[in-house]
Image 1 (cartoon, rainbow, N blue to C red):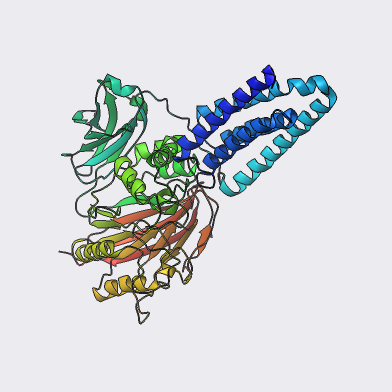
Image 2 (tube, rainbow, N blue to C red):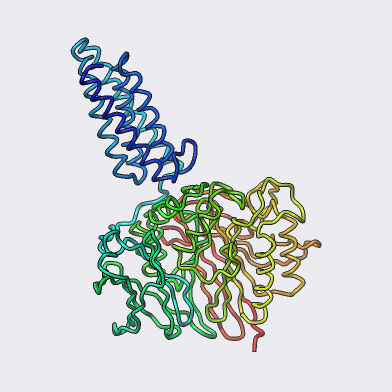
Length: 558
């Protein structure tokens, strides 16, 4: 092997190692046929580059073309997805290796070499363009991006608030890599009206991944506050958050909800949600679409971080607290269940990274909370469910026995203590598709839930759902799942997709279904004392209302 060939082989080998390292960092393993797709692409690039090293002594021109193609593949991945610097370095090494390998063929047959290289470059560019179009057709944004720009990273990479009550809230944030050297982070809380500092709260925990958690209490009900994060006495004013604590007693307010956004989505739908000024945003699942079904907490954290860093999303989370339950793509792989390998890693990262309410079941992320006289119940329809492919029957469960018992306790207590109950259930409830990924494949358990609701006369219930990439509403007409098909008939509202292609699942729905991306729901609660009026408005990224449903519940509470 000549000196130039040896240099080319060394450069290409270094590039392959860098690409493999980038793949491992992205997925938590060297994934060849696993999600995320870009990690698999980088792994195959590394394999192809090493194979070309073996070709170099006999077929240097072919080896050079393979390395150019590898560099082109990395460029395409970089254009479509966030990419590590190591992968970018690999692309540069491949190009230099290709140039070194071409020295011999250029001297021996310059015309033929230039023709082959030119044809290869054109083919790589054309294939890259086709790949980009295919990616955008199936996985790309569904509507225009927000005009907001990324916030500068000083002390904090991202932050969001949740677990809001009448006197408390929680913030989690990822602290910048070098910031912790300046001291322990703290949360500074001010009244929104006059900027008076009412609390300085040190982080209750900082994980090895630099995720800090702050828990604030002792606040006034229905009061607006601003918060910032400080490290070493210096505040990160670029990420100033604001929220309102929840009211006590009868109160009127708006909740936004939605599901299903591609990883790192920066669509204008997040601007419209923020401009609606909801008291809370309920995320009903598929916060990202990385489909990580491996025990890879680093990859799961990065998937969340990519979305939390997106400018429009970060602006929303800074201005609106969140309550969030996952679905399949942000819990594990597509249609995932309790058997997925990511189960424990996903649960662990959720507890670390999400500002959640207390999780009473030590496993599933089920949780509940009150807003005024409204009780909100979030169930976990993924990490306890049996595979949907199993035969339906009494032993097949969506929620698992412990969570089902907890749900029944919550519904029964809320019947007697709340004027309205909102059940957040991530997947379609109204469905007759026995082979589906939703409640249509769990009819025995659905009947059990429906008969509990009917037997205990729970009449102040509505359901919020996601998963299906549509806006839809049913007034209860199609929600008749007791053994005698008489009830319980509560309203069901769907709002998705925040930023994915449209689809319709389940149904039929009395008010129709409207598939599409850039969509969300706004739920207006008007507590009038002796009755509560609920208005569901399904909207798109322009702010246009596509579907509307209203219902009034009498209140018999003392």
